[in-house]
Image 1: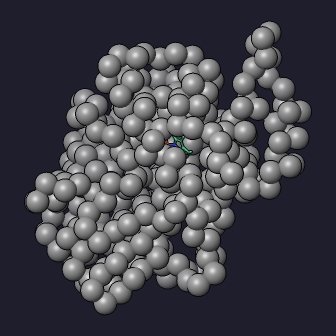
Image 2 (image 1 turned 60 degrees about the horizontal axis):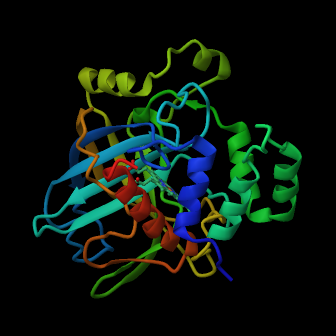
Length: 303
Ligand code: HEM
């Protein structure tokens, strides 16, 4: 039984991070970039996908930190995100998004909302870690994400961070139905900072570091589809698939420029996809379109 609504999430984010007029209600700190998607033309599944059969395509990309604080501390480990919009010649768009953790904090919106609610301070401004621990004990589907968080190190650069799509999607071609999850890996390799190195950084540093890397050479990512098998979780982003699943390289995302406000009019809604692709019935994925729409409308109207 789903009870939590998209507007409840937005209200909760505004309580956790304070009202931030005109800002994204989550992933508020970030940097925009542009570049191109170079499809892998040798893929033998995803037959006839316009995403892969139109040559290089322009892409708008935004990298971000989790949370609704537009001045988040980039030295602190935690959620890093990537939103990608690829534009096809016929005017359709293809979005995919990822975070740097391999598994989501909750099997459904109610669980994720319940977990975040335990982080709210009381009327005296104090948080109650006991309440959070109790919730985690009673809700096993948040545990894998929390375990990841506890060992997470600070991202050294967006150009050295990998991103997981987390949800399950389908591709229906003429001859094939593929069940998959997005995975984006940095061609410069995954690099993190330990606590000492992170504390020695000035904050913010991620936008500058990305610009530096672009100046020095190529910043690119490999976009893959992890192919699911019978019995793999379809509607539950809190359950990871086994490590040995086949991975198919769909192409490369090459950055060309970073900075600027080209991402302001973009709503990185993960359910917007080009022909042939469709979302699963994952309730978290469904909730995202609704919550992003509310946030998008608010931030564009200065709320
Ligand atoms: C119920 C679960 C979730 C809720 C309620 C939620 C909510 C939001 C909201 C309100 C925004 C701001 C949208 C805007 O103003 O444009 C956002 C941004 C974002 N979210 Fe989520 N989110 C959820 C799950 C996820 C998951 C599972 C992922 C990763 C796969 C994710 C990755 C991102 C990223 C990368 C952005 C930044 C997009 C940008 O740069 O504009 N979110 N989220």
